[in-house]
Image (cartoon, rainbow, N blue to C red; front, side, top):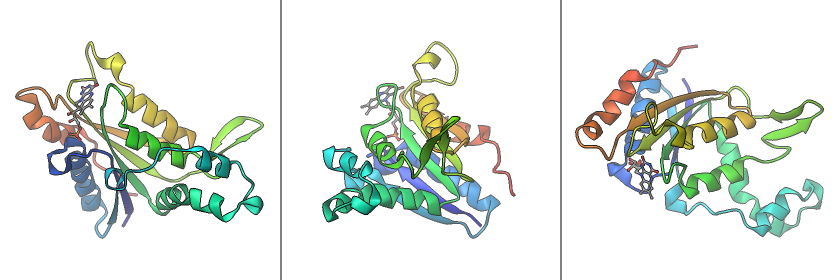
Length: 203
Ligand SMILES: Cc1cc2nc3c(=O)[nH]c(=O)nc-3n(C[C@H](O)[C@H](O)[C@H](O)COP(=O)(O)O)c2cc1C
């Protein structure tokens, strides 16, 4: 039994490939781990906030010196970090926007990468502090990026893998619904992605 956290960043609801792909991945995980629970964080519903001066100041104010305004400014960050720490498995839905991720998902990342909480620097360099998690990336793109001429334009998967690895989440599986703007291909994009996905390993 696993605790699954589904991060949703497409605003397209039931029409969204990344949401449907995320749900298909979750079905596979729950089949492997019956009784698993799923918590959704739909970033687009909350208009997840971009970092502003108040949050950045609060991040770098030592906990003992934080004012009530500092604590209030940290609420979104504290909440999403708590959600991650509580989960065993993250399923992160990522539509490709202009070769990268939607700004809402970037805002979420800016709130979870926190010095002293999710990473720190020691004498050897940076060290991720979020350990023992597994992440699946449910990536949707209008074109094809897993191979061919457009492959170097994929800034979604290298970025997400790098930033998750930076905070300690190094076990990352990429699942792609590709060609969602391409006739014929779009109709089988999710099925193809799921068929190519390795079955979750039962530990
Ligand atoms: C603002 C915007 C930018 C996009 N940029 C790209 C892009 O750079 N490359 C691409 O292949 N598809 C691009 N697309 C197409 C989406 O990646 C595709 O429709 C995908 O299915 C969106 O994910 P969703 O179905 O989960 O919403 C873009 C779509 C939008 C709305």
